[in-house]
Image (tube, rainbow, N blue to C red; front, side, top):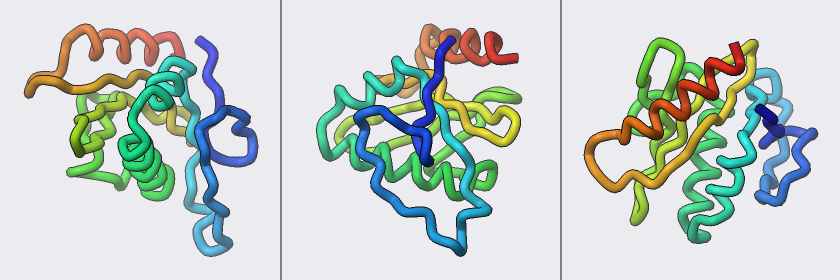
Length: 130
């Protein structure tokens, strides 16, 4: 599985990330890597939803393990769900691995229950990393 960095100096994708790292928090920010499919998914969203998604990813980068509800929810022992609320309910499965955050899978949530297909996809991508 190929993953590319989303945030930080190594990012070369087309999702706009314009946030200078302040001196005060530079030691606290975690590196985020994104699966290419997740990047395509984010780019396919409406502009307002992209903005909300990137803002929530910023919160994840800043707070890491400390980010909780309503933005993040633990799904399994090693898998978490980033929750973006709005006209479209977006979910991004992610995990922590060696001091980095890996965005594994994303989808538009259309029902109350998380689709097993999406959960299995995220679990498979997580297993390929470990």
